[in-house]
Image 1 (cartoon, rainbow, N blue to C red):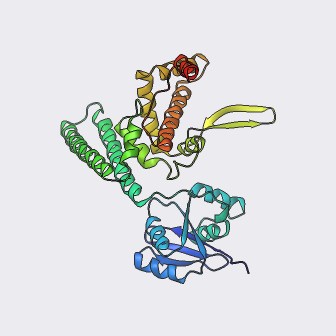
Image 2 (cartoon, rainbow, N blue to C red):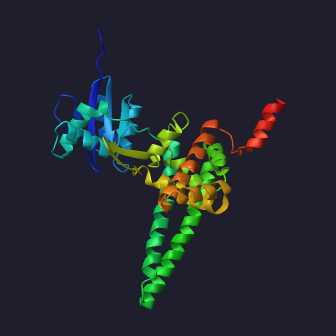
Image 3 (spheres, helix red, strand yellow):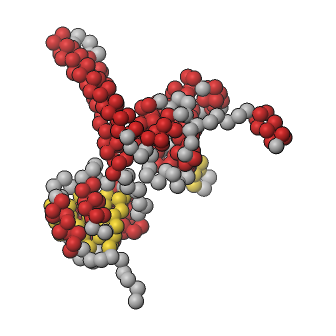
Length: 321
């Protein structure tokens, strides 16, 4: 007799979660460890729980259910919504979303879940980037014409205080990384030319969990750097890139701009693309993608970056061996 795996959907919010067992009526569970453990015990076995990524509010449920022996799958909210609309669910409520996940969750691609170690490092990395973004906003306000001097002084003090905090957090991040199992991965990512500490930090935390076993093309798509074709019949539109992981994309942008300034291959590629009527953005994206592929390659290989020898040297080595 075949064992049927029950599909369960969960719509997560800050204070409560709406859970729906496939074919059943949705019910509410408080988003606390005690309530979630009780809910996990009440679910039929075997089962798979489908959750949308909800800004971190899904973490507690994913951990508690996982510790209870329940398989938890996390999904992209946008893709879940589009699939629900495709099957005719036009309403948007918590019970409808939970029921939709229970019914269609098996059709959705699964987002790999970060390990607890990487998640803590990612939390720290994102805190650094958030504070840096806030500093940029204050700097922009400080540059307003005819700004009151008292306001100017206040902005300056806040900027200085946040800048000191960023430096403290960056040192704390490096200390945590060196004490973690990801220390070697962080080191080999930094070995790539024009991949500095900031890009290395972002890459370490934001690359997909399965980066060691997936393809560079899939990682490019995850980052939003894979070109998306637009053609149908006689129509052929320009390829575009998707949104992807915006934090990882920002890290690749910083690395690409640095490479264009300092690396011969990047300068030549940029000039060649610009000469073929590519825009500045298109040329930079090509270099961003190249840097991302390099990061993926060293992570998968597990060794530091080694520049590819010139063609003449490679031919010589082949001849002598």
